[in-house]
Amino acid sequence: MSVPAFTGSNVVDVDAAKIRGAGSNVHFDKVSVAYGAHVVLHPLTLDIAPGEILAMIGPSGSGKTTALRAVAGFVRPASGRIRIGATDVTDLPPYERGLGMVVQNYALFPHMRVEDNVAFGLRAQGADKALIAERVKDALATVGMPGFSRRYPRELSGGQQQRVAIARALAVRPRVLLLDEPLSALDAQIRRNMVEEIAKLHRDLPGLTILYVTHDQTEALTLADKIAIMRDGRVSSHGPTADLYRRPPNRFTAEFLGRANLLPVTVAEAAGPKGFAKARLGDAVLAGAGRGEKPGDKSLLCIRPQHLSLTGDDEHTNRIVGTLKEVHWQGELTHLVLDVDGTPVRVSATRLPVSLPERGTAMPLFFTPGDTSLVPEDARV
Ligand SMILES: Nc1ncnc2c1ncn2[C@@H]1O[C@H](COP(=O)(O)OP(=O)(O)OP(=O)(O)O)[C@@H](O)[C@H]1O
Image (cartoon, rainbow, N blue to C red; front, side):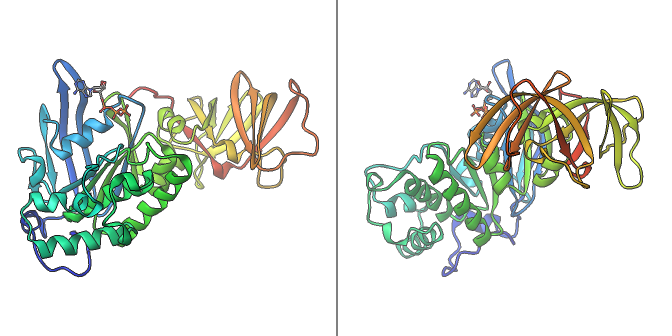
């Protein structure tokens, strides 16, 4: 049972009657989309589990919005089927799919008060007055704006307008919420607050499945249970958020999610019982989590900028030496760039030695095998 658990109403609306018990998972079954001869989504097969937040991230033009719009019913797949719960929605119009959708630029009706904006979808469904009043109240309470029903959009901040847009999407009690860059029009501080609010919303409505399209990897890492990284109309990688970050399956994922350093290495020893392989970078022998590589294989050693330390201890058994190229002090963090055997390596340091060497001097960097993994070089999907 995955219809969101709003309190205070037992009235069933038109779409909810169809979908109740049907589940809220979203299934893309070999869905492709083309504009004329231009294929922008290659056959995509992907599942979003009931109650899951899936963040779809990737460079501009990689097909994220197209995939979301295919679920919404605004884009017709050239082939393949889309199911929501047990229902094949491929041929259903958008309003019969049981969805809520929020896009980047609020899209509130400026001449309508907040309550009428939130009521819009319910009125379109022909819901009665009492139900509308109750749902509007519930939805505004859910997004933390119970006192704002009589205001006009122009009397709200950007963050508040976007919360009203989310309330409007929730008022029809969707089984799936589609969020397309919902925060990208907001400034940085409000964005951070809104990310927390969306996380809270999801805790309050655990049955609601969310497809979240964003450019912003921090939003994706903070909110998503799983991430799908799109590249050129295909899924480059898909998996639980922490797994993709800790053990990126390919170069593109490692670089796109968290801008990892990737050092070209040659495998010296396959992974032992603890899962650590050894790899050679120049004279250095470095240990990191392996993926079945064999001695002699070319691979990439993945290490995040914040896991590189300027000082060593017993845990930091991996040691490389680089030439200091750049230093950027940013208050909480200092960003350094070193050249290690021709590869630029970024370091984010919270603490610096009392005196940093001059640019151009060689300095050691230390890291633990547990923060390190080998990534295959198969850049293309
Ligand atoms: N209506 C359209 N007609 C023709 N081509 C389109 C149309 N909509 C999108 N495209 C093309 O489809 C490709 C994928 O676009 P899409 O909007 O899905 O990418 P995206 O990953 O969401 O990008 P962004 O992050 O910039 O929003 C792009 O090459 C785009 O130019």
